[in-house]
Amino acid sequence: MNESMLCTKTHEYVLEQGDKYEIGITDYAIEQLGDIVFVELPEVGSEFTKNEAFATVESVKAASEVYMPISGKVVEVNEAIVNSPELLNDETAEDKWFIKIESSADQVEFADLMDYSDYKEEVEG
Amino acid sequence: MTKQTFLHDKHVALGARMVDFAGWDMPVQYTSIIEEHKTVREAVGLFDVSHMGEIIVYGDDALPFLNKLVPQDIKKLTDLKAVYCQLTNKKGGIIDDLIIYKLEDNKYLIIANASRIDEDLNWMVRNKCGFDVSIVNESHNYSLLAVQGPKACDLIRSLGVEDLPPFFTIKRGELFNINVWISRTGYTGEDGVEILVRNEFSEYLWDKLLEAGKPFGIKPIGLGARDTLRLEAALHLYGNDLDENTTPVEAGLAWSVSKTKTEDYNGKKVINEQLEHGVSKKLIGLKMLDKNIARHGYEVYYNNNKAGIITSGGISPIRGDNIALAYIKNLDNLSVGSTIQVMIRDKLHDAEVVKRPFVPKNNKVNI
Image (cartoon, rainbow over all chains, first blue to last red; front, top):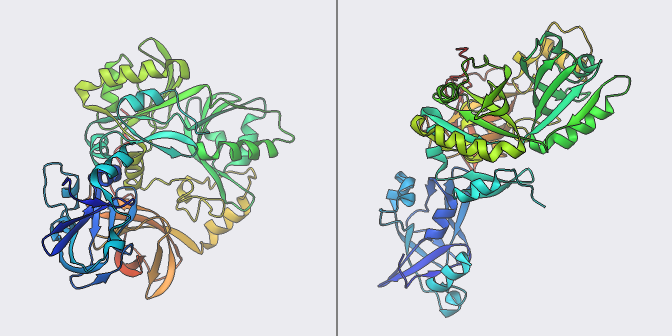
């Protein structure tokens, strides 16, 4: 995982990439879910506010919502994980991001996000 | 306080993810639910199901007592034979589903669901009046290990048990010089055995089975795969597919109900009426026609009208699609092949009514 990403308590990450942000779920979340068998992503162009559910990820056991770490408009979705959800469990696979967004989120929206190192410490105790 | 089986340390040492199940801290998976599922369909898996209950019923009236409690005819059991039963209330609703073994005259063993042991015992005691019978909860003394899969019986035979009991039969045996009960039963749709062993020997037996099972491809299997395996085999899960407001007939278990039993039993009136005149709700099997997964509690629609509810649903690792069990209103024009809809996150998704089991069973071989 990229050290410069910011994480939520609900196990999403956001990573700044030029004028866009990449959003996905953390490796810890993937490990906790176990075998991932279904991913549903929003349509390009849809807009979400911070903390709003934008995607669904299902393990064998249960369905979980994925929430926006910051507000924004979807400009790209990762169809590969929709077509092959098991890619998320593949440790050698790259590109496990969910969506890319354009965002004009201000500092307030970033205030409750954790550095990856702090997040890791929190989940691993 | 969460309970632990005597194999708890073994699960933790194997790296299992532990979850609460019916008040027990149990392994949900060791590596991957899908991998574990395939191990059981292709080779052999070892399950710790020690959370399940063992109840001994004995005494001069053990037979008439049990015959009052279940729609099955316990008279027909010969020594060491078992029967799949439902403990029914006065309305025919299912308090628990059980396996009852006849150990000998006037002595029976009941295997009960972990979550229902207390209700079962309460119900039995309430029905005990007038019967010369003793009910003993032995659950805290015994561990239960399930060995399941196409290689399960080869493994057990390789350990010196020449004559495996036939399907739904139990026998006393010895494994690694430990006295055990070996039953030809399971909850996976595969051939295999369930081994009842006193707690003090369960860790030793677990280790020995994993070691001796290596050439057969054995792996420990968690409750996650146990659930996907039983769903593919369309075996009911108490609390999901069965409850006190559902009768065996509604649950698609009429095949298990005795049609010739003359004795009265709790719920007989309702059950007989349903056998004769049909039911207003029934259990069906579904396969999803897209990638969406139907889960417990999701609503089912037919021609845009609410028609029922999903009671169990998930992926089928063997079929590669998503399957479910649902209760639906008895609609005349609905049959295998019909398309109905499941409401998933506020959208209707097509599903097809299919036959149960979803995957052919491979366990009725009496070799």
